[in-house]
Image (tube, rainbow, N blue to C red):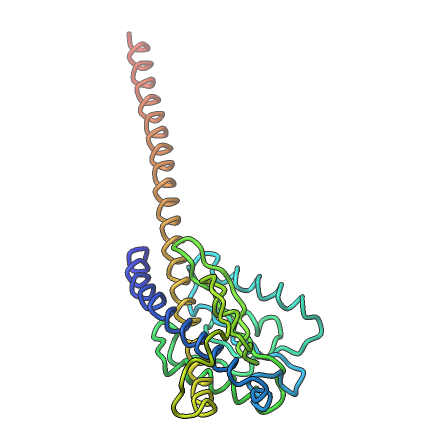
Length: 274
């Protein structure tokens, strides 16, 4: 299982790392265009809080266990996040059976359980479908904000549960530059000639931005899952090897004691006959 997890980890890690520059670039482009829009941005619902009071959350966990503290850390971070928002109506959209089981056991309703395709077979179509569901729920009125809660992959030994606000979209896309330490300001927005119009480009860019953020979150989550599984299986292998060594020592000691007892019986019998 450790070797299988290591093989899949390399494959998903390459995809997750490759998706980051595109996600960062599209966020920065959206920031520049939003800055160029100015007051005209007020008429776009994706850039202002929704009319409802509920908060939508897309929670991404694993379908299987045996991945160490991956899921428990994610759920612990989710509980802390929920405690910071007492009394808020949170409506969950879920990817991953472990997340669905966790929420249903605690009586938290799940609006939509996205089970097909499984996260291990994630593709851009799934991200597009999830983005459309969340966007429709936000624009329909019941949601004030929409978050995606996933595990960000930082290294082979570090993966951090992370909430990211998808809607309303932040004006300057600040969160997109947090990980790289780069600001996403609107400098230079007026120096670019856009064709077709800025409004048309922004209309097309917003759905792509949401899809890209969700797709990157899914890739980083599955990469973090296999990194945690690989480490967990390595620790299990090491523990089993240590246990085998301990048991072998116990066995040899018992065997030596048995042989010594038999020798003592033989010597005692010989002395009795003499």
